[in-house]
Amino acid sequence: MNWGTKIIIVYILFVIGIMFLIFKSSNQNIDLVTPDYYAKELVYQNTIEARNRTNSLSEKIKVNQLDSFIVIQLPTEMSTSNVKASITLYCPSDKQKDVHFNQSTRNAMIHLPISTVSKGYYELQIDWNTNGQRYYYEDKLIIK
Image 1 (cartoon, one colour):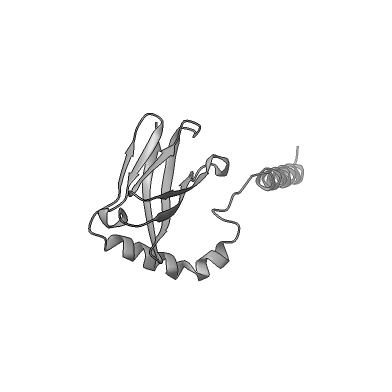
Image 2 (tube, helix red, strand yellow):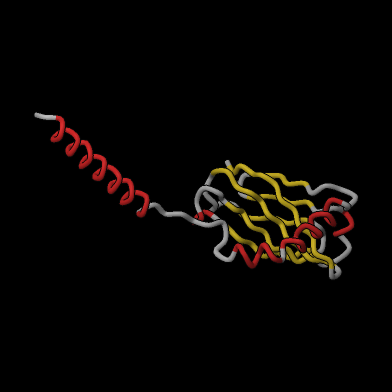
């Protein structure tokens, strides 16, 4: 076999390899964190202000995991007013595992049932309103 034939074989193998990589990469499922990320980025300053408002509270938020519940204890100044919370368990590795809860409380305690939630790593995102003020809190959570 002469050198011209070897060059053509190497070139054909290279093209086949590139075509295989293009095929494999086009079949990959790529989930964005949120499909409307640009619109959310424009209003992210509101989240920064809500996070700063949360950090200025007298106590930190306490999150405890029991067998079938997650108990969220809000600071004591939230116990005198009606709190409406939107809570998300965001799974960075799989969009189908994300869980969303809407809760309201008057005693600053929130109980989330997690018996149907898959085990694994989640980011707990709590966005709540009380007395016309918005608060936001994030924490990492491993559901066992």
